[in-house]
Amino acid sequence: MVQALYESDLKSLKRLGRGKVRDIYAVNGDKLLIVTTDRLSAFDVVLSDPIPDKGRVLTQLANFWFAKLAHVVPNHLTGIDPESVVKGEEEKAQVRGRSIVVKRLEPLPIEAVVRGYLIGSGWKDYRKTGAVCGIRLPAGLRQAQKLPEPIFTPATKAAEGHDENISFGRVEQLIGKDLAAQVRDISIRLYREAAEYAAGKGIIIADTKFEFGLDQDGALVLIDEVLTADSSRFWPADSYRVGISPPSFDKQYVRDYLETLDWDKTAPAPKLPVEVIRKTSEKYREALERLTGRKI
Image 1 (spheres, rainbow, N blue to C red):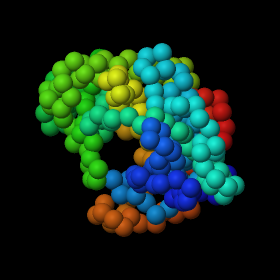
Image 2: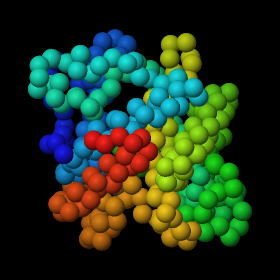
Image 3: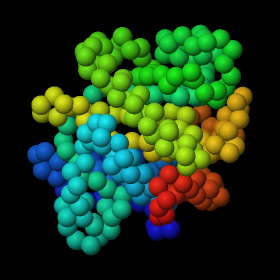
Image 4: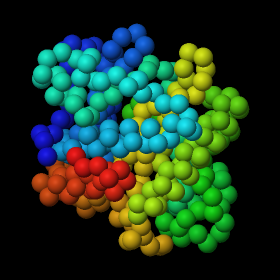
């Protein structure tokens, strides 16, 4: 385990933005460098304690899926070595194993969420209304139950605070009917193929989110991260039970710890104990190893 990177500091490139986890730099007019740090957010608050190896795990896992699913939809990767666009060994060390150089694209203003199981906000929505994002589901479903078919439950992308679930009709208003249908159909296909593969590795992908952009010709491109433990809910198949929230290979372990505290879920977040940091890092690394056979 190497020293955790909470924030990158690249002097040779102009930083364009700092997200909850990623730092974004301009490489030139049509390319970006994305550095995946070890920051972790919970309840939409960025914690002060980084999770060692997290950025490397997310980058390697996303790159694995980008390659595996490239036949479904093009992605934003350029294949350019991130170390070749920065200067000096200190900067190379910051980007090594945790960065990608991508095409500059026009991002769509939605999160393309696909759910295969009834959990999280979907479970809460279903208990109240019998539906998820306006999609009526059979009566009597239980927590964590597999849905008859995967469903597309989009959300708006919030710069700050919580994303908001929206209807498919709202997506059509935002991006047009044809593009909305394309995003929905491709997202469900990506989920189905990934879930089938992961099942063979002993992992259930309960739900996930994709992000898309448009290139200069208006073609749809898969962007951001894909099928990582930050953008998906991974469950170990051997401990999955209907009726309970299964353990997961993601930051749910941190969320569960924070729920035990007297914290109002606004910044600043409480400090994490060493044991929680260690266990969370282990969960991320185990997900990578199970799905790809690779170790950090």
